[in-house]
Amino acid sequence: MANTYVFGHKSPDTDSITSSIVMANLEHELGNEEAISCRLGNLNKETEYVLNYFNVEAPKLIENLEDGSDVILVDHNSPAESIDNLENLNIKKVVDHHKIALETSYPLFYRAEAVGCTETVLFKLYEENDCFISKEIASLMLSAIISDTLLLKSPTTTDDDIRAVEELSKIAEIDYESYGLEMLKAGTDLSDFSIDEILNLDAKQIDFKDVKSIVNQVNTASIPDVLEMKDELEEGINKIIEKENLDIFILLITDIVNSNSEILVLGERADLVEKAYNVKLENNLALLEGVVSRKKQVVPIMTENA
Image 1 (cartoon, rainbow, N blue to C red):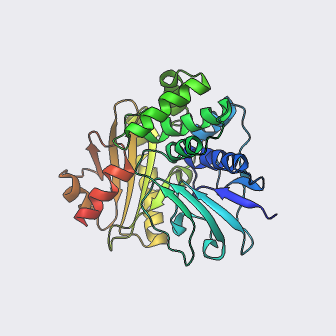
Image 2: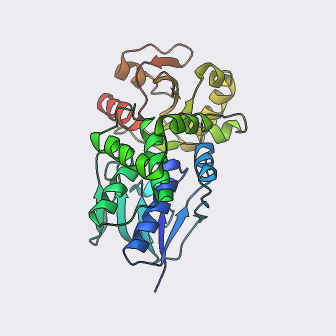
Image 3: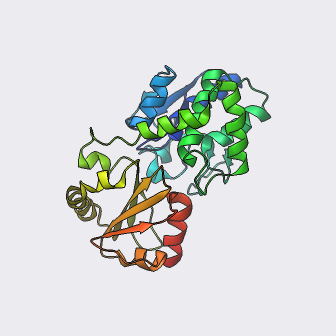
């Protein structure tokens, strides 16, 4: 029987990595022993912390697959965020929590819900299929939901996410609040990263109507520490704008402690940020109070005002 490759998006985050592991395990529980957990990029520090904390091996790194290979997509469905030859692969399933950007010429299992994290959807699938959730799997699910919802403080958080965290923390036997804060802090240390790495840590091309853009988000416990690199960040952003022919590049610097974001914006259409949030950019910066979610508080607002 042929392998089924399970992977999340490029520039993977904790949800993307853990979902590939958890989904592959679910496939095994459902009888597909050939499911293999994979990843399309390097681990970030938060994800490294999670895998090391629970002594879990990272998914296999892949760069390409043979045409016709069976795949399962988790935490994404957009071809722009996926493996390069996705159009030539056989997509068996998709489990996600983002807007639909995928078109196929054939039917497939597709489960996407408006929740804070893909792992919340997977938690439901385990329940619905009466599949066993081990302590390890529960710990990975829990970590991803904490990550994507910023300890249930993000506006993307739903009642389903809260219920999943409550149930999974019992199985994992973890005080999710204390563990979650340490996990989030572990992911904010940027000292070992180059400017290029920071600008690609969680960068996503998200065009606002006809405005070509990249929105990158980094979490921190201290916005001033990140802004010490402002000149270098701007130089790197301008190179990306020129290379990718962008109209705007947005760097969302999110304070995980106070639930605010400083936004660093460059490009010919930087005025869209001022219009969308009724703020004035000063030295390319503006404080967006209460804004922590790119998906819910940036993309739809920017699209509406483009």
